Length: 370
Image (cartoon, rainbow, N blue to C red; front, side, top):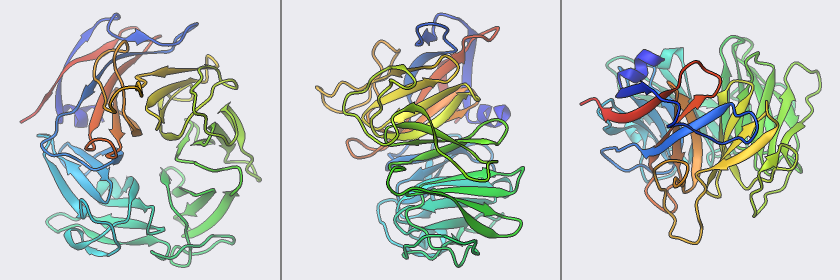
């Protein structure tokens, strides 16, 4: 992973404990540096997901609203499949295919296949990439443009989905988890059967992102009001609240202990320290640090709504995000994709470091490899 990312950018890295600013009040585990904009050669739509391209020689794959785009090491944006500004449905060659809203993407088979959650077409799609051939788009799970629910185990072609949101691949167990609107499904790739694991259409609203712990046992889900977890090895899944409230968005964001914290509309989520510290995107223009180890929630880069909506780069004393949708950690750097509602879609980066490491690595300057 490190070598792959070094092919994308030249990092001028040095040891300095002062450039990462501490955010937790008692025993901080994570500190942050500066929020920066990644300068691309073209504007993006709303950036719903960011992944290192496993197939190419460096670069990223981006869920770009209605398409899948590749950002090359020279920061050139190319559309692999779908239409940049048109929403519809259509399988076939990538440049003729159509998507609804690309909410998430996962690479399998060393990047040869990209699995995509197509939110508004109510299905999961696949983009096949083979050497020397144009990408081909097909349906992976569900009947596109048809809404429905899974009750009993069914094959992928017989499954009916409603608003697939996020995909979670566990290669060690050869399974996928699919987060839908109020539902979590499990796709056993060995038996090729899809089963219902959890359903709560009343109190499991606004779910957006799923993550696993280091043992692939506990699944963390952010949703309206906070963050919960499930024990995936239990016979009956039960939602256990970790932070915030069960099912309520709050206009006023509140920091503090995990049960007292108040969240707005949560979107992206990523581990900063596995099993200990989460970074959660609050669509109401903030990044929330959920410190499970220290039982505390704090806020960074919060937008001041009295001014025109726009992100502001810089340190924690001035940085602001606009409408963050996703966050991914790649080679020790946080990549943040934002909505295109208020501005053109763009990608931000935020440096961070662990407080208890022997040294602190901070990106001083990012220079594209041309």
